[in-house]
Image 1: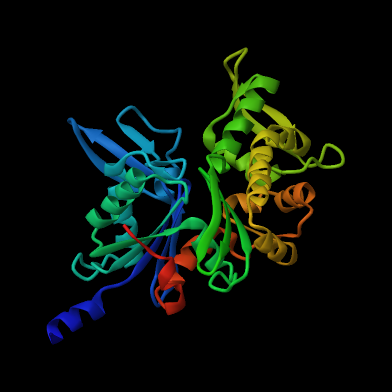
Image 2: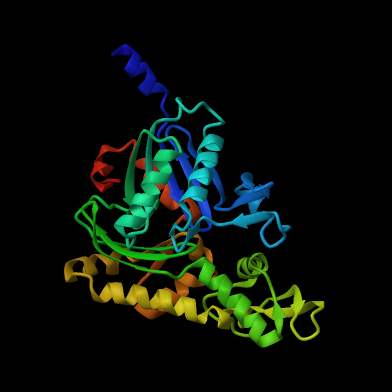
Amino acid sequence: MKIFQRFASHAQDVAIDLGTVNTVIYVRGRGIVLNEPSVIAIETRDGVRRVKAVGADAKLMMGKTPANLEALRPLRDGVIADIDLAEQMIKHFIDKALDGTSRLRRRGHVVVCVPSGSTHVERRAIRDAASNAGASSVQLIEEPLAAAIGAGLPVTEPQGTMVVDIGGGTTEVAVLSLGGVAHSSSVRVGGDKMDDMIASYIRRKHNMMIGEMTAERIKLAIGSAVPPQDEGVVMAVKGRDLVSGRPSEISVSEAEIAEALAEPVGQIVSAVKAALERTPPELSADIIDAGIMLTGGGALLRRMDQAISAATGLPVLVADDALICVAMGAGLTFDDRSYSGVLMAA
C-alpha cells in the first residue's frame, strides 16, 4: 500500500488547454508552466517521418519549409484534425512542462479543456491523444466553465454569469449557474478566421498575397473590432504582388483592417445576442448586473468589448490574463473541491 501511495505522490496532475492556436499547460503546485503555439514540424527522410520541432520553434518554420519538411497544426476549429500529430505534440509539451521527467513519474491525472459544442467522437479523440501521451486518467471540462473559473467568476453560486471565450478556432458563448451550463453555443469563428479575412481583404483590395503569419502580425498590430474615427494607425506590409509576381510592399490602415474584420466580429456579436435571447429571465437579470466576461486571445482584439457592449447594451469586461484563463480554471479544479462537479468523464 505504501508503495502505491509513494508512486501516487510522484505523479503530477496536469491541466491542458489544447487550443487551435496555442497550447497552455498548468501543473498542480506550479501554475502555468507552458504557453506555446500548437504547431509541429515533421521532417521526411528516406520515407521515414520524424518530429523536427514543436511549439514556438515549429511556428517559425510555417510558410518557409523545404519539400521534405512540413509545419502543421494538428487542431482545426478547436478539435483534433490529426490525432497522431496531436498525440506527439501533447507528449512533447507534457515532457517540456514537467522538465523532461520520466514516463512513470508523469502518469498523473490530466484535465483537458474541450469546446462545449464538440461531438462525442471529437472528445474521444482528445481523450485518446492525452492517454497515449502518458496520462493515467483523463477528465474533460468545457472551455466556458474553465474560462469562468480562471476569470474568478462565481460559477458555483446560484447566480447567472455570462462568458464569451474567443479562441483561435471557435468562440464559446455560455451562461453559467450553480456549477453548470444553463445555455451554451459555439460558433466556428475565432482568430484563424480573422487572419483569413485580413489576407483575403489585402488580396482583393491591394492585389497582394500575404502569408498566415503576416496576417496574424497585422491583426495583433492594428486589428480593431470597431473602426477608428479616421484612418487610424498605418502599417507597412510585405508580400507578393499578384500582378507583377514580384515581392512588394504596401501600407494598410487600421480602418481597412477593421473593415476586413467586420464579418467575423459580426458573427461573434450575433452569437452573443442569440445566447442572450435564449437565457432564462432570472439569469438575464443577474447578467444585467454582472455584465459579460470576455476571455481567450480574441478578447484582446482592440475594442472588441466596445463592439459587444454597443450591440447588447450590457457592460463588458475583458478578463485579466485572458490568454491563460481556460488553463488556469482547469488547473484550479485540482485544489478546490467545490469545482469537482464541473469535470466530466472522458
